[in-house]
Image (cartoon, rainbow, N blue to C red; front, side):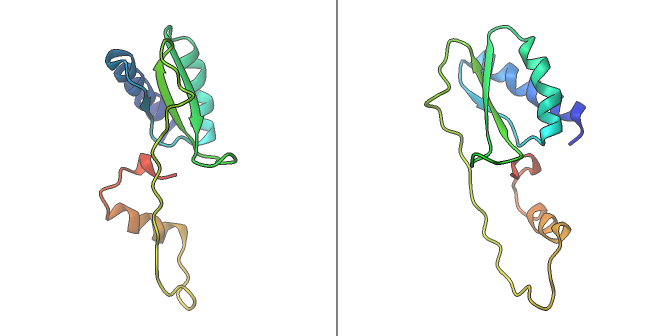
Length: 113
């Protein structure tokens, strides 16, 4: 996702979070996307967020956005694990092969960590 697309996505999620009074997670963001988005979020009044990638050193992370009045510490973000099985010894799979397999599912690519 391009940084401008990421910004549009995050701002749309922020609007939902502010309107619904419920914490809302974004899709996964690359470090450069998060770096581009956070200064814009800091200018939004009444909004706070935290990032999580499922594990502490995760490079790609989702942001959990909420009104400042709502606590974020005890709110969990859902993550799912996908198992890919196959015989890759003689036919090694490349990243593009895994992405093609994931595209056949109903999972939005922003949900891929």
